[in-house]
Every structure is written in structure tokens, then in C-alpha cells.
Figure 1 (cartoon, each protein chain N blue to C red):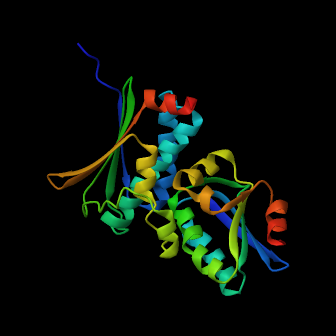
Figure 2 (tube, rainbow over the protein chains, first blue to last red; figure 1 turned 45 degrees about the vertical axis):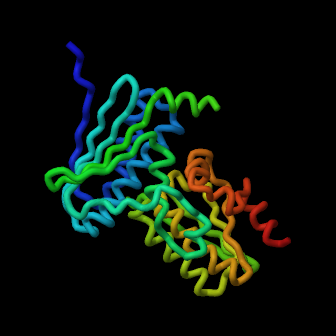
Amino acid sequence: MKKPEPELTVTLPARTEFLKMAVELTRHIAALNQFDLKESQKIAVALDEAMTNVIKHSYHFRSEPLTIRFTCSADALKIEILFTGDPPHVEADHLDLGRLIREKRKGGLGVGLIRRIMDQVTYRTCDGVNHCEMVKWKIRSSISAGN
Amino acid sequence: MRNFLVRSKVENGVAVVYPKGHLDAHGVERFEKELVKLIDAGVVQLVVNGRDLSYISSAGMGVIMGYLDEIREKGGDIKLCAVNERVYEIFDLVGFTDIYSFLDTEELALQSFMG
């Protein structure tokens, strides 16, 4: 019988005070899963961006619960963020920094940054619960690190 | 204990901003206030010295991005220096390294403003 993949679930209030804690936890879990320091840092940034989007755009800074689920397998690290509130408004994939600067925007980088860091990013809503799922493949990561 | 602190100095019309620690959406208001204080005082030549910056997310980069056009329209610029490798990689991922000057030291950044 196939062994279940190790999983860690953390629920915390959706407040910016908890971003650093979540980032440090993510970095630690990524490092434990054989991602190097640079990749672990980037994966933690992706988590920060996704969590910040939930705090700002789904809960509008209301301190409601947000769950982060880490699933580790031989091939990948999967991070899911589960939350209620407004479904995520996913910005365009294409990160156009020049346009954002011309428009004097201070936001609009987050989703593009997540997509540049993670190999797979999906959003869905099921029974009133929103899911943001981000996957980082270990093989692709080691190939890109070698480039 | 605060995860993020910021201070600045102005010398010969050039402001140097020193962000320290972990800059995310929680500390970004403090960072923005410091920049706005300098811009409102008429400074258009800014250096962000990242020597003590251990982390940055798009919240912090967004502040640097949001004022660049205004500052360049006034004939100034925002430059970055002494950023550690891990933080530089995040700037690089969003394309900041194509648009902003990154210098190795504060001295080089200040010199670059002298023409």
C-alpha cells in the first residue's frame, strides 16, 4: 500500500502580522524537502504573495481564518491556501512592469511573481471555500538551478 | 519587537533610505511614509541601501515602483545598492533589475548621481 504523503496544516488569522511566521515556516518546509536556500526563499515569497492577496482582496483586512496546507511528495511540494471571503480576483498572468510604473501603481506584482516562482498555480472555489494551489516540482527546480 | 525598521538621511540633495529587516505587507506603510516624507520635502535623488534588508515581497517593491515615474518626471531617480543575493533575486524575478540601477555600494550609488 502506498504511504500517505506527509502533510502539515496550519490555520491562522488572516493578518499581516502573521506573514513573517508563515514565510519562515514555508522556507523551513521547503528546505526540509531538498529545495536549496534560494529556491526555498522564492517559494516562501510565493506563499507571502498569495496570503497577502487573501488578506487584502478576499478578507479586506478582516481577521478571519486562513488555512495553509503543505503536502510533500518525492516529486514536489504542494502548498494550498484555503479561505472563505471573496473569491480571488486573479490579475493577468503577464507582469508588465513598465506599464505598472507608468500608471504609478503600487500593486499588481503579486500574482505575476507567484507564477514566475511556482510551476503550477490554480485557483478554484468549492462549497464556498476558495483554494489557491501552488506546486513546485523538485526536478524542474534542480534543472533550473543548474542553468 | 518590530520586524522592519527604516531610517534615512539626506546629504547634498541625495537621500539614502535604510530599510532594515523583513519588508512585507505588514511593514510597508512605514517604508512608504519614509519615502513620501523625502519626496514631499523635494528630494528627487534617492538611494535605497539594502544592506540590512533580509527579505522583500511585492508590497515593498510596489512602493519603490509607485513613485519611480513621478521622480523621473522631476528629473530624479531611485537607485538601489548593497542588496544581498537572495533579495536581489526577488527584484530580478519581477524585472526590477532591468529598470533600476543596482550598485554594489552606497558610495557608488551616490557617485552615480554626481554624473
